[in-house]
Amino acid sequence: MLPTPEAFSRSMSSLGVGDQMTIVIYEQEGVFSAPRAWWTLRTMGAQQVYILDGGLPAWIEAGLLVRSGHVQRAPATFQARLNHDAVKDFSDVQQMIAEHAQILDARSSGRFAGAAPEPRPGISSGHMPGAVSVPFTELVEDGRLKPAERLRELFTAKGVDIREPITTTCGSGVTAAVIALGLELAGAENVSLYDGSWAEYAQRPEAAIEKSS
Figure 1 (cartoon, rainbow, N blue to C red):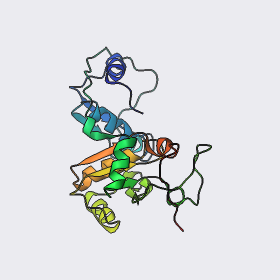
Figure 2: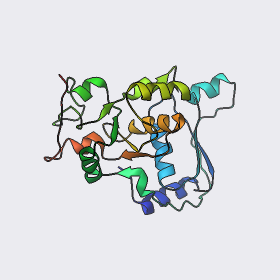
Figure 3: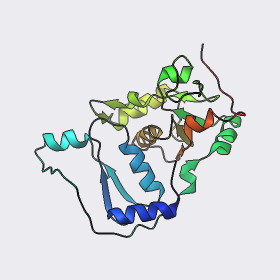
């Protein structure tokens, strides 16, 4: 879940990261959590946030400099400004379900269908009514996100209209950001993320859960 803007401001400032800086995020391997950092920083007001395509392996393969050990940066100024339109909560999702809005689920197809268990004890697998299964691994190839045209083809094949509002979800709000990044690369302009995701949704007694046959 997102911290408060005040807490985020303190943490980023103490790390030497300012909201006016150019920020580059990279993975150690594959595509998994860097998009969540990208989404969080942008949602909190940073404007120039990028992800290194191919991550650390691509950097090393290119023969670029790497170092080991602790890095200490001078404090900077990060003034977080939460973009409320980028974040959905449980009540928002309930309304979206009622309105048959587009919700894309990044979890595995087995968890989405209800055939595989959730990793968190006591939580049922399955999916939200009307949600579309888009396992985040389908967006990734050889440790990178697929090119924009292939991402558009993937979303189109799943019946997703990137011209309309889309909300992404997953198990805990991390890989939902992989879909959010893929949607942006594909040309979508109205994308939000359900931050509580399935970990919150499936624990609510009033939440409708469907399972595929």
